Length: 70
Image (cartoon, rainbow, N blue to C red; front, side, top):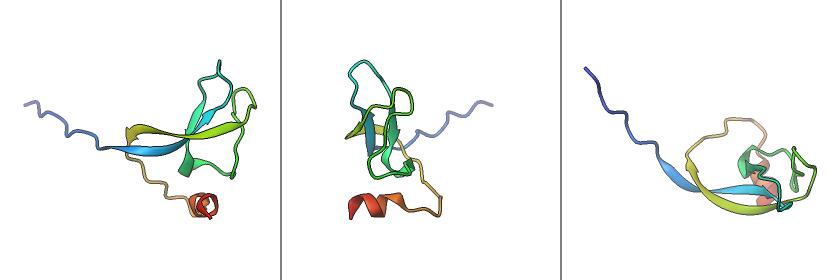
């Protein structure tokens, strides 16, 4: 018998967006390794933003968010 899957929880998430208008690169802020990352696609500076994204938990021992917020 088919069971409908549970809905995926969505939340407003801090992200980095590529500053180059023609580039669509972005990454979650809590998955970056630098305080001010550059776009991995075009090497432009990235700017902070938000998006509605599925909840993901970063289990990495490196807590970059703490250094970004400080």
